[in-house]
Length: 303
Ligand SMILES: [Zn+2]
Image (cartoon, rainbow, N blue to C red):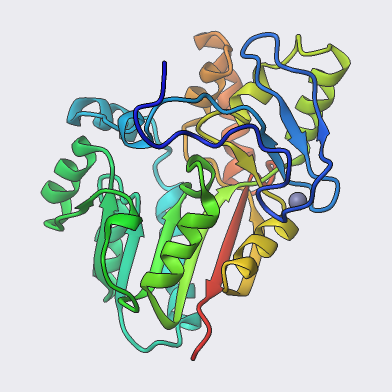
């Protein structure tokens, strides 16, 4: 397909997180042709050859039924706990004094609904029309339809939140710049994004040893939807480059898909996935599984 608008990033030969050059490249996946690069400085890993052509808005053009099926595959409980803890932490680190919160890629509005219960004034945006419809029904909030660059004004919000958005966008530096613009001085960005974990190192080693033949797990973790898997050091460098003061960047274990859905997405047959999922769910619930996520809190400096 040829491009009809914004192209996804071309092959990236410098680290999207810390900016260092001369990465180490893995063999191309025999399944997808994707090539994963490793930053020798910060340990971030990224897709060097994302698929060109499709506008990001098109790839999120889900209707209501499609979006509802996606919501149904999410693990119940895990994210609610994370939502609650995040709102409490935001209360401790926001210095701008207000309660206006903007959720980027707000989905069906579950996080905004809880934010409102905890005394925040929720706002948000979405690209998927089906999600905007669900958010309207569940929260009464009218989400902005479009990315953050189409939202006018500056110094508007005390908190901006992003649940697994940064790794999906073709230009994460630009997204962080937009967030910096709309935050008030003293306001705080919270984001969670996939982290390069021990599981991924195993998958990458397997891909290298088999010259791109055993790549199912690696392809599932680094792809057009997760173009960068960050390290703490790389994510910190990127936030600081965008003008933020990093409050904290912490690895956590958080699995938002149900384990059986996740295993089946890796190609494990249904019955085996159901059996394996029981044991893995226990490990996830006890926070014993790989720390697959980074939580970042970063503040726009006061004046
Ligand atoms: Zn780097």
